[in-house]
Image 1 (cartoon, rainbow, N blue to C red):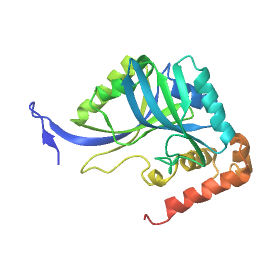
Image 2 (image 1 turned 180 degrees about the vertical axis):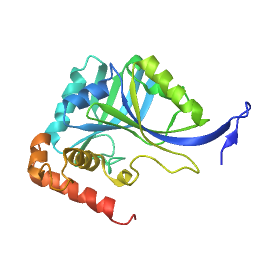
Image 3 (image 1 turned 180 degrees about the horizontal axis):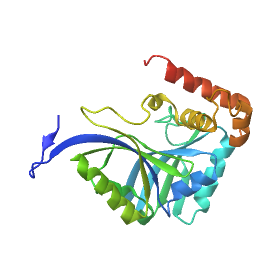
Image 4 (image 1 turned 120 degrees about the horizontal axis):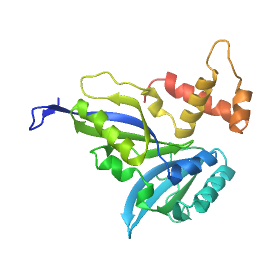
Length: 239
């Protein structure tokens, strides 16, 4: 049940799943260049710079190496450190991908959309996911539903950002957006969504597993493994 603000407007918690693009962002530029994604676990400001701990994930170690090289070469970052040897390499990475590596990245606050989102009352509920040149945020906000859109518009205006609401749910309403997909790993979700968009699940099929493997530059066996695991999680009972 929602609460009532001093102005008399109904306030209730709303969960949003957001797909975000904005300019001058090293995470978006580097994941667009390399066939690898990232999960951001913590983002803190220290000594005038943002320090982010992220997990890079991919199907192949070479793809992560390409991502690290792109981050290091970016004009939008100050430093990237590979820290797998210092921290638990599986911490928070079980849902990431086949190959993972922990990174620490330092960059300018002006190149991040983080403060613009938090300052509008959006509270991250999950780790931030970055893949294929987009950030994916799951956030909670407690305000009148009529205010949510205006606050998103403020962020769009301030950061010159493109923000798409991919899912929304709140008490007493039916959720929108894919909920069953939450059980998939990041790479399983990427491959499954890519295959669905390309028509792999159409009848008759528009593309084969071989076609998808060629487009993603991985083996057919890897594609089939991801798809079978994704199908098993989506169709099977929840644990």
